[in-house]
Image (tube, rainbow, N blue to C red; front, top):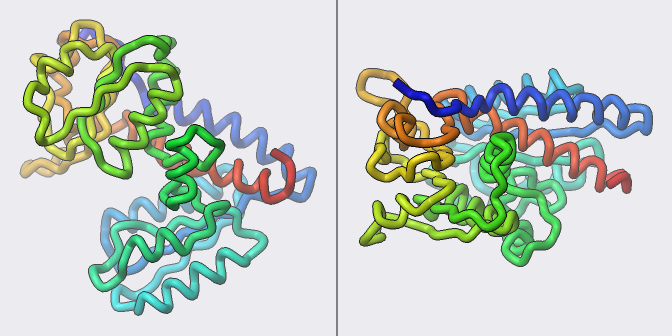
Length: 286
């Protein structure tokens, strides 16, 4: 039986969206309507769900949105031409090209083609560089959502030891940088880490993003630690599971995120926040 506080990503996400909605209404009076363009190449089922959810979030918040659906065999040059067109389009403040892309398209070339001012995914090298040196930038959505969830627990990150399992460019690296911004002391673990449990059991905050179902159990967790599970894995049974064995870990942890319903809802909300920030900057209102 879990006695740990469950961190509801849906609840935190709803609270942030309420704030965004009020801001969008205020901006409309200044002729500023945030605009998001989502580009989907091919028919990956998971990507289709994400794209639908993003379009719905735009509608709910009063954003302008466009969805560009391209065939799976679309040439890279054609996709680049669309990105350049959207870069120039005044009513579009954010551009998101849904990953993964088909194998014949070089993801790096597409990411680099998006204007840094419209890179609401936070993947462009300019935004990544600004994140590293601590300058203002559009932040990657999932890591920014992780920080919001930790803040929501009321636990002070400053001076705490945070351990991140996973070193991906999309989650592990940026979340470690954002934790450092909050003055946490950060240790990064990965597949080659020799003494992982020894390190994770020192963590006041444990962020897990390894892409392996139920990888972290109670033996990895310091009693009372905040545990944020970024993983989403489909089991053979068809059920979703995180990277953390929730039942085991929650028996010893402090506040912990479930899967589903933890980090997931935050990602699209932070995307909306980035689009709003980009719109305000484009209109000289930030």
